[in-house]
Image (cartoon, rainbow, N blue to C red):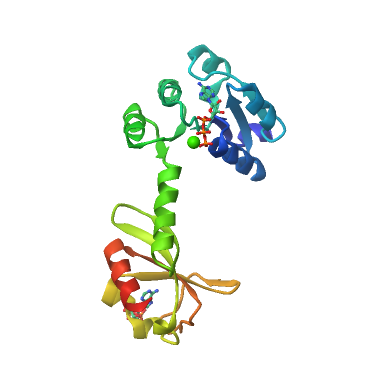
Amino acid sequence: LLNTMKKQFAVIGLGRFGGSIVKELNDQGMEVLAIDRNEEKVNEFASVATHAVMADTTDENTLRSLGIRNFDHVIVAIGDNIQSSILTTLMLVELKVAHITVKAQNDYHEKVLNKLGAHKVVHPERDMGIRIAHNIVSKNVLDYLELSDEYSIVELIAGRRVHNYSLTELDLRAKYGCNIMAIKREENIDVSPAAEEKINSGDILIVIGADSDITRMEQDLF
Ligand code: ATP
Ligand code: ATP
Ligand code: CA
């Protein structure tokens, strides 16, 4: 009875991306059905997933017989075979699966998937590329999360120019329209820093703001 309350996940395509999702869901104690048309892949995940089955998901009857419409969330992680990815997604939409997440291989693929009605399209290679580029362009940017075309969250390392200044003294909100969401100092993280809080060089500041404002602030102070 308890098991029927648990969210049911299915992952189609057990490449590096799909495989990582299966492993992580399993680590988090979720029930996950792993599907691939390649028998070796299925065997590889037999001991990791709750169930692992060999199936070609472009076949509608196969999808029906797997009871795919009863899953809460289906992740299509078919990589290079764009035709398989599109056909599989189309049928999942037609079967009215509650949540469909699909990995896109390129921008055109992404467009098609959105038109088909995928609920979420992810583009991990591109997104990771963007993050890494931000990371290597500026030595002070540790990590970067794009919220929209305009807004981001970044992790910045505090240097000499902000050392021993409080948030009030720096006045980042007024001068740059940026908010410090949190300050990481060694093992500690302060998720609601007080205005009088003094920054130390080496602290990691988690900043939210418009990209242009963050860049301006970074150039002036970091
Ligand atoms: P990653 O970049 O995440 O490693 P990849 O580029 O290696 O992925 P592919 O190998 O192209 O991705 O596809 C991932 C898996 O999807 C493969 O193991 C492949 O067998 C499986 N796959 C492709 N088409 C189908 C299909 N129609 N039905 C089921 N599985 C499929
Ligand atoms: P407001 O919160 O509306 O800006 P306030 O008088 O409540 O005004 P304080 O919280 O006392 O402001 O902080 C004074 C100034 O310090 C703020 O105007 C802001 O510029 C800056 N400041 C405080 N906390 C932060 C933060 N988390 N991120 C960026 N700047 C901050
Ligand atoms: Ca790939």
